[in-house]
Every structure is written in structure tokens, then in C-alpha cells.
Image: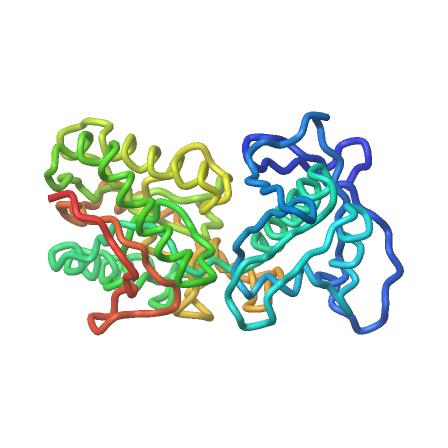
Length: 357
């Protein structure tokens, strides 16, 4: 990281710089657990977004976090917590591993308590971003007609293009899992799943009902496109999804849902708009039928995993099936879907949903 251009992190509407502090490293220790990032505020005024309570002993602030992330605040042998306590002149109480509860920060000075809280928030955000995605917001696109048309598409592609480099039956999506993703989530506790359900319900009440008119959105899944810029070296081929009436309502709806979840911190901001697409071919499926596109980047311990893949030549497919129609659908529900978990019908398991009608 360039010293003069450090990474910026937004917390509670304010911007902070992450400045690395060089520390002694120990052989065989996990880099994540040793990592401690210093903070320098971009503004001098105190953050008023935190609820800090005055007590007879000084000041107190509490926050909740998934127990899975406690270890990153504690650090190896408690080094990270000790450093936080020394530098902010506070005491930090963290529940034991596996126990849910509140992290409690106490200190003689309000500014110290706020500083500790801010640094803990940055640590939590930093290591949350290293967790593999667990859930995603999506529309299911697996109605019977669409599944039949998809299988027809697969059959014709294999019949006409199987001699093209990299094209075989292993890279096609499972028709039962056809979906349109709105955003990816890292939900590390039942409380966070419940929070997501509540946020989705708020979206429904505040703007989804107005956009949908309380009725399903009639869409068409037709036409194909590829993700990268070389049709001769394709990794992901997708079907386009658009409103039958030609309006922009679907795009408006998903963009506003994305914006709301990004503002809440439940979805990390990567894009300003949702790319409406349904993956039909993906080279990651070649070696792992359960792979899930570009989102399958981290292992279960949060390490970045490079996925070697063999691209396919999509030029003939794009030419022959450019306007292929997979069918029409009525989108009536947004689901909180769990990755790598299927229901009795072979679709992604849903942890919650809202219905338009």
C-alpha cells in the first residue's frame, strides 16, 4: 500500500485512513491474527454516532459483533486488545469464544472510548471483508418453462458448438439454481440474518410496493452476453433479464435495494448498480459443480483462493443464440438465499423472503 495514498474506510458517514504499523512477526503465526492497523481520523471533531454513556467510573460504550470475529479484536495472545487498551486508555471486555454478547468499552475519557470503538469497528470491517460470502439477495428464475427452455439451449449448444474450444456439458448452470443476484452478503449469526430480513421488509414498505404496484414484475429472460471483453476466451455467459413492458422498474427496484443494504453496511459497496443477468454457463463449474461465479474467491478460513479456469470459445454460441428466449417469468419474491445449501427442490435454501403480492 502506498504510504501517501492509504486505503480509506467509511464508518458512520465519516472517512478514516488505514495506516499500517509494522510489527514483529512470529514464525507459523496467522497473518490475519497478527495484523493490527492504526487509524488516523481525517477530521478532528469527535464522532457523535456512537452512544457513549457516562457512569460513576467514567464512560462506557457497547457494541455487538458475531462471535466469529472476536479473535481479530483479541489478537494472538491478546496482543491486539492490549494495544488498543494502551493507546486509547480504555478497558475492553470481549465475550468468550463461542458466546454471543456485547463488547464493552470503558474508560476515564469519552474521547478514548470513542477512539477504541472506532478502531474496533475498523478491525471488524476489515476482517468481515475477508470472510467468504454466506448468503445473497436474489430472485429465483427457475420456473418450469424457463428450466425447459434452458435445457433446450444446452442441448442445442452442445449439438452445434461442442467442437469449439472448452465447450462441454460441465460448464452449464444447474437449471434448478437459475437466479438473478441483487447483492452478496456476509451473515455470521442468526441475529444478522434477522437484521437482513427486517431490512428487506423495510425496503418493501418504503419503496418496493410503490415500484411493483403490489404485483409481480413480468419479465423476459432473453438474449445472451458474456462478461469479459474477448468472445473467444469466455468464462461467464449469461442471459439478459428485462421488463416485458419495456420500463426500467426492475432496474430501479434492485438498485434501490442494493443502495439501502450498502448504506446499512450489510453489503460492501463495490458497484453503484446491479447488473441484471442470469448465469447460464460458467467455467468454474468445470471442476466444481457447486462453484458460484466470481463470488467464490475465499476459502472457509477467509484466505483468498485463486480459481484456475479454462475459458471457452463463445463466438459461435453468441452468433447462433444471440437472441435465444428462455421464457417469461413473474418475479414476485426477493429471497435471502444461503450459499452451498439447497432445499428439497434442488434450489438454493431460502432463509427469508418478501413477496410483492
